[in-house]
Image 1 (cartoon, chains in turn cyan, orange):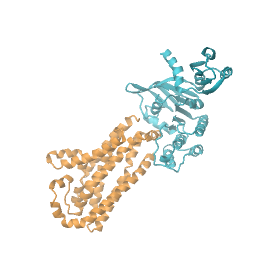
Image 2 (cartoon, rainbow over the protein chains, first blue to last red):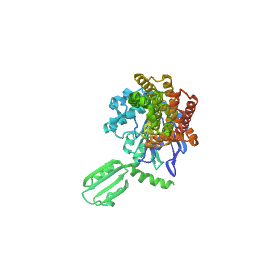
Image 3 (tube, each protein chain N blue to C red):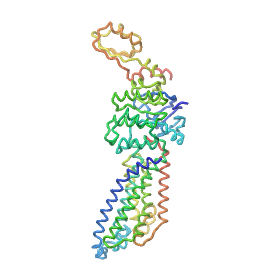
Image 4 (cartoon, each protein chain N blue to C red):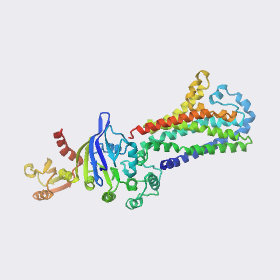
Length: 297
Length: 261
């Protein structure tokens, strides 16, 4: 049984489709990346899964419960954890009091273990917390009842890189013991690092659904170079380079081939400056899916 | 599943205690002037036009019961405490949605019906604190100035005010469910309680328009009748309770159906 299953899930506001017929399934024990730029409709999907908003059309199941069945959905929430992007705690409570509050509703089998990894100042009132501390408290409350499924919306926002790594490692351990993670993010590199599979959403529609490895192969690397001399296009550009832009002695492109062959290719040039990075999510959309999309439709 | 009730109840404590303190100050003031006022009451009262008394529903102002009904209950209790109940209820749902607390709350295995009912149930705190604290203060005050107030009537003026205050809360919770902005919901609840009270008071002045007051909650709670004449209108209290249940049921239905953005 899939932990989450979306069937033609649609949410419309007037003429605008925030979610437009999304169909996908998240298997038990996987980390599923839900990737898309801000405003693409990721949070709309999550809010429907939690029963906060009702679908206009289609439906979804969460741990076997149809989201249109309020009673069934409420029951399965005992095995669900949720880390919202915007953490609304009761500001006047201390961290401890807030966790006690959630524990009364759904238990806290692994609160102490979590607090060894993520340790916000529990004695202090939440209103004094930094963004990172709020996020850590959010992570603890999402996992403390050892849920079967955790839905996370931009989970690393506000965390320092060390804590981000810790979270990524923690997620790997949790899924190894059977927990399913629905990981929504607009940061490609993060999804690449953490997730097994990825669904990409743009303007309310699911534009890709595949293994992260395949996505990486397709997305390549963004390369930016300053050569000593002006770039001669016919000589420099190979067929693995796409989206090439040349200005005098500067060139940038997306490289889709083997990294070693790129490096040996570059050794025959005098390079003043170089930068190799992951392509921006927007670039991937622009250069891969838009073409595929127009062809399909 | 009483976690929400526990948390909400704790939030109600401070406001309730502050209100009792306000009533302690008011009572001290009124009790300290009553002995002197009592001597000149007749001459003093003649100076006021008749409609003033009709507007506030006052009578027997030269007795401690009439005086306290007028000074403490007909204005401060009915209006101030009524507004308090409407105002805090108006914040219960819309504020949690606005601050995004509702998202986390509803990620727990708790139904929306349970959330709203537990929140409203937390009003037991101000109901108990105020209805115990204030009559004790008033009774002790009246004993101290040797004008002991009838304790039974005093108890009834509080008991029968509970349905009235619940209706005010019902107005508030309905505002909280149907209005999307915190300030607007609170202002609407606040304003409605004042307007309804004004309509009741004003309509009492003219027999032709008195029927309009039948649609206001304060018409069904007559503090002067209770304290001065010891008339206990249980049927009126029943009407208020029915109105409260109707407000609450309607609010629950609307809250359960709506999208939470």
